[in-house]
Length: 392
Image 1 (cartoon, one colour):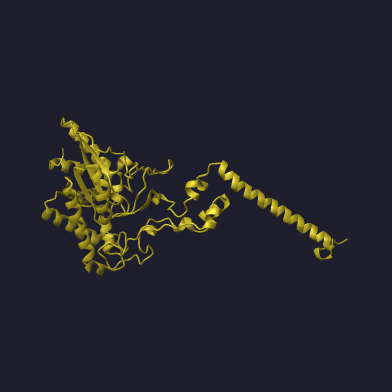
Image 2 (cartoon, rainbow, N blue to C red):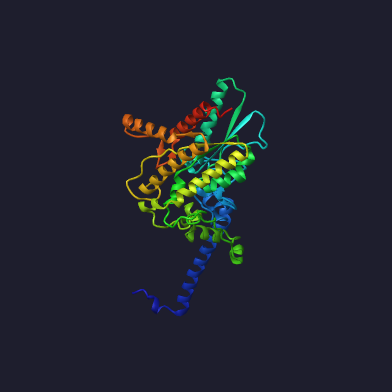
């Protein structure tokens, strides 16, 4: 005998079956919500932690080490550290500098060196705080001074931040580094200012053609109320595209991070970006000297450009970088500032490694230092500072 189909069953039986299905679905949904709301509070899961869910508009990748600053656009976050399972380890002290916390006021018998720069100074490439070139510089200076029988000790403060130009470093020196009573101010800049020079929009003297203030987003009253729900937080964090939208530091710091990333070589004909670089260097040097510190310029090590016109590693960017190095050398001579030509040293070492090993181990991309490169820069700079009798 044929089994009755759905249409031949009595209406009451059909409604009963539908009601049972709805009850099952309702119970399953309730259990799911309970698991999310309660389970994610009881079981520690990094993806569902407060740090990940309660501040969804802060970058969620390694650039989460930076945050907004009222005078510098952004700066490394104080008391921040990488997760223990991350390959490259970094930590910031309470002042937001990478490395140990310096004492204020400066203790007797201490000479201080502050280092200004971008990611190559901060240490995007090296594997740890101790592997950055400022840390290597401190280690080598103290080793040589101890070998000479000197009682003076040197502290080197890493004042770099990823993406910073001389605009940010000028403010960084004025508002943050001078309080540390530096004896030397080491300037390691060229490539990020080069990037601002060849950025797509017409160059402005205050760099607002490229740099923007860090944007923060307020929460509506409804969102504030819903933030009590873990399910809402997870949906907002992972379901709204926030995770992927906020992955790049450029999303917070560049006027348009999605501009045409292939600057033409005729951008090099615009002198204003180079004038900005020279003006800022003069101001950094004058400010350091006004506060009893000696400026030192260091040429930035770099590889040849990639065989393309990309904004980061292309021909226009590296050509602008090299022009900035010429400006650095000219100003050093004019203002009688010590100049340490590490770019030439790296060029020789890279050529030697390529000839002997078929590859180089000092730099990645164009300017980021690997551990051996940071070691070469720190130790080479230490030798020059001592040879020039800038310390003790």
